[in-house]
Length: 263
Image 1 (tube, helix red, strand yellow):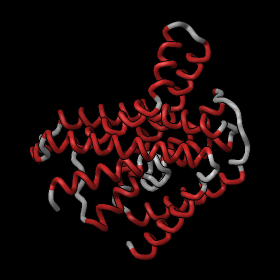
Image 2 (cartoon, helix red, strand yellow):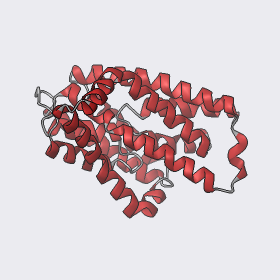
Image 3 (cartoon, helix red, strand yellow):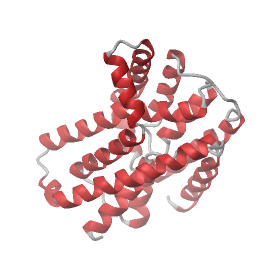
């Protein structure tokens, strides 16, 4: 497939599926199988991470600025939120480090992705019964619970945003606060993933990574960032209108079709 088209498809896929609760990693596995998409390569992975990082920071720029300002001025609420974000990242890091080999193997199995998408769909449908509650603020126990949900989402086909927002709603966090916390807590993981890819690139002797030009890398980052921003806008709007569970129907259908037709 043409390099430019490949980068565009991967960038759109990253921008949409990274934020909507449909699993970007799972769709990348399926995209590679159905469309013949190539693995993005380390440098493009970093560029796409930068794009999605831009999406979150642009969308929540006022909240992030407020949080940073509060931390430096000693605001207790800001410190509590910052600690909650840090604590929520721990389960995913520990889970990945312990089961890294097994997790990496799941990226080669479309059947695993299909089952994981159905699991995601079931969770999203169940959250419908919790989504009518107005909810409250983020507390440390809730942050830990949402962090555990995020750890499960390192598996392809399990949506990070789907798991974290669902757990946030189930534990009683208000809809917009649930989305805000879900994506603020993704920032350390996105930065960590980009740094891991950069380290991998620096230690790798694979010269094929040089195949993607700087222009295509920039294009990929911009497209992923712009698409991701609009995906975030759509998600928050649907969550506010209590329509978040509808993504579960899509995941159930996509998962069942994957199990039936992709073996």
